[in-house]
Length: 298
Image (cartoon, rainbow, N blue to C red; front, side):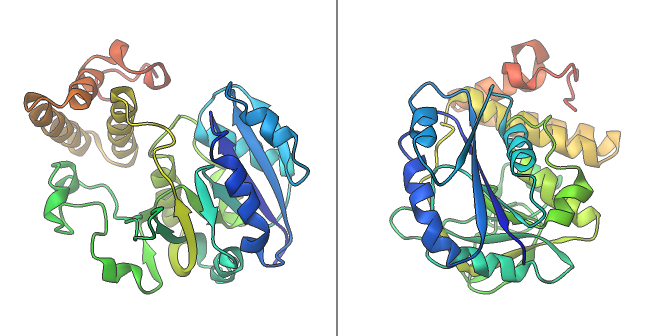
């Protein structure tokens, strides 16, 4: 297979991106590749650290979001082979990338996702089911498939499988899939962009496949856990559902999201109070979500 284009999108990532870049040669195991780091306006020294390296290209950008960063990186490298999309807070295990590449040799496969580990070596539950009305109830803790987007059974992570979508921290995307979808949807500033991409790939007849022999370690939490970030997660879930379903079902999904966040807000969860306000009052949403969408964000 032709060269792998590695796209890393950074924002205030000086404390992690060096370790990721250092892990790439062993992870490639001889696979030809080129690496670009798209920095979304960092002020913590990320740009200077990357610029001082000889193993990657730096593209400096304003903070237009994760999807926009991916698209900018793909355009900067202008390759023809698969695209490896990476968060900066990862390290890749030796030999992991060729295993993902092998999974894309099947023309029915558009996206390949690795096994993700936490820093302590434990399994990170990274595989997901499609959003549905039942899964909007906020009852994922039951682990029932009809109520939980996350695949919670560790046994599900032991063998290769097709999934609806997977954590976007590390995804290898077939170039034909990327081109067919027109890249990543930049209206998702952060969160739900990988859900949207994988589901649109499935709509086009291209599967997302899980490759357990390809392993990455994910530090996580790079974007923070603030109430504004949580609000962005919740509003983008509603936006994604609305784009894929008719208005009556979308209104019900919206109502369920309100009920779920409202019940948590009543119990004192500050981030859910922020999400609830963002769902109900468009002008109170984080700036990246003020898309003129009205109460039901789209």
